[in-house]
Length: 211
Image 1 (cartoon, rainbow, N blue to C red):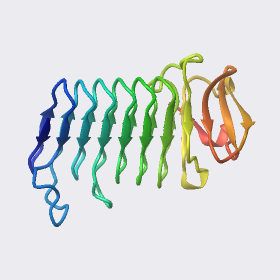
Image 2: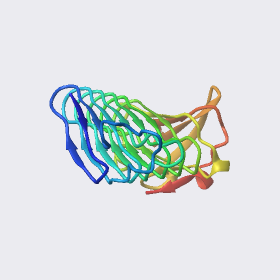
Image 3: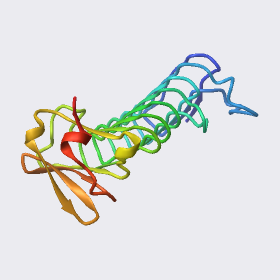
Image 4: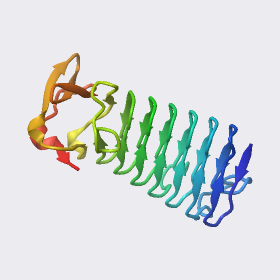
């Protein structure tokens, strides 16, 4: 089912099937992006859903199923969005803006894209790509508990020069690093919780923050 919102602030609900939900009218973006200024809340519920936010600060909930969430399609501005994948193996794209992405359960792929984004994989084997900007990669399940060997995150593009940080809980003394391949393993009390690809320039004292 395809569901469209309006130019205003909408709350839209999907069905238990496979839905495509847009936070803007069926006419699409048209010749420009300026009219899509509503603050939308989109719920996918069951099924494998695709949710599209608009220009402003939207909140998207994938729900059950393998969902794809887009904070916005405007290449220069799409609001400071909050995307929650829920259950399933989800794809989350923040778009432009300072977004918060949370994969939830499942093996998720999160793309912050432009802006200073916060990415939380949640349970499972998740892949986190911050994109341009000073991004925060939050480790553990929703930033609180670690999964004790039931999964780990892969951070694709950590870049300290852009101001990226890795957020953890507890005491920094519980963490250690181990070079592996062309990247770095992050261990919590000896348990692998994340792998940072394509760089070994990671320092606990400088690049980690407590949350």
